[in-house]
Amino acid sequence: MSNLIVLAIFLVVGYGFGTYAENRHYRSIRQRERDLRHIYVVATKYPPVDNPPPESTLVAGNVVISVDYFKRFLAGLRNLWGGRVSSYETLLDRARREAVLRMKAQAAALGAAYIFNIKFQTMSIYQGRRNSVGSVEVLAYGTALYPARPGSPS
Amino acid sequence: MIIENPEIPEGINISPHHPLRELAVLLGGIVILLAILVSALGFAAEEFADRIPFETEAAFADNFIAQLPGLNSDADPNAGANPETIRIEAALQTLADRIARAQELPPGMKITVHYLPDDTVNAFATLGGHVVMFKGIIDTLHSENGLAMVLAHEIAHVRHRHPIRNMGRSLVINMALATITGATQSDGADTIVDNTTLLTSLNFSRTQETAADETALQTLVALYGHVNGATELFETLLVVSTQEGGLTPPEFLSTHPVHANRIGVIKEVAAQQGWPEQGALVPITGYQ
Image 1: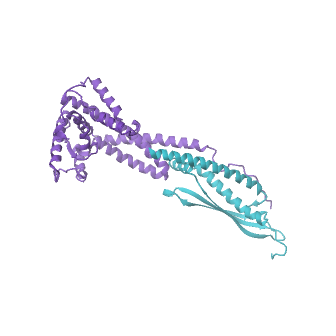
Image 2: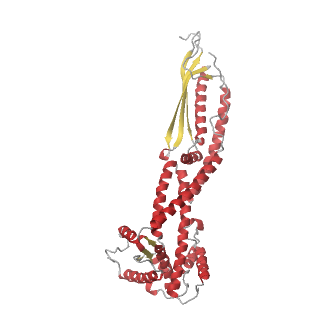
Image 3: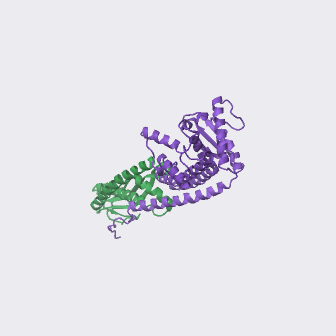
């Protein structure tokens, strides 16, 4: 019985902190997405042919986010019934958007207007007990194009 | 090439359900499903276990009774035990045989009493008609009637085939649980699964305790003509637990109904059946 009480405490604490952290993160994500809207992120490999040709460089954004106890518990129950594991949906949504934002911030520092050939890599980097998903890493990377500086070799 | 940067609508990658609502649905579902599963499997397993002949059960029990420390196996009777233990065990066996006759045990159902000189306040019946009595429980009693109640209660468990039924049930349920907890891959979810199962199966166990109490009362009437002394053990335990300020677990969480409750039930059954509650007590001297 005492382990039920411990579980309940963990769930309440996990839900409280998890929800607070998630809401705060989403507010920050939305704000920075508005701020960096001027950078275009494109999946195609083939940039437009410009004259003079722009400079290009690899930009990448990497993030690791952990899921809270409550969501992990919910996902465990979901494993029995099947269906959308919605408790992990926000985790991956946040991780992808944060990775893109970090990549865009790097591009913004270069003065780039475009990132071409964007790609994602996602992996579960921490296996909790019995292989439950603990946290995910998302890496976003692409080729930033920025105007050639005068005098630089093209 | 025209490149656009459309604003992506918020929340398209996220299910609109509130997580607490999802928790309620999933948790409610699993608790209900488990309760049904455990009850159904338990019922089926008990019915099967009930059809196992007592001789088969006894032969099976002999394998591990011999391995329990302090219990004398049939093959090696009373080896190394002190004379006091042998004397009390023999006296208990005689009382058990009287109780067995009074309970009209089916032919072939043999009761073997084991006496353990240990202060643990406990007595239990296990597979194969083996009943274990600790010195500690006998010390709390004041009359042979009280002792006969405890012994008759344990023998009634054997008569109702409770040990083999419980073993069959827990075997089947544990197998089913191992399958389910293997699927959740989450320790938290497993806690829910285990506790639901525990609460569901405890209920069976308390029904059995009540049944054993009723049979034991009937035995007292057959042996002594009255049920005086039947509540001796629980009255002592009640005083002890109140004095120690110990926590008495709520009835729902306990395999045995709480002492005060059990005294009440015993008195109620005796009154219903018209069994006299007063009568002379036989001294317990021979058993201590």
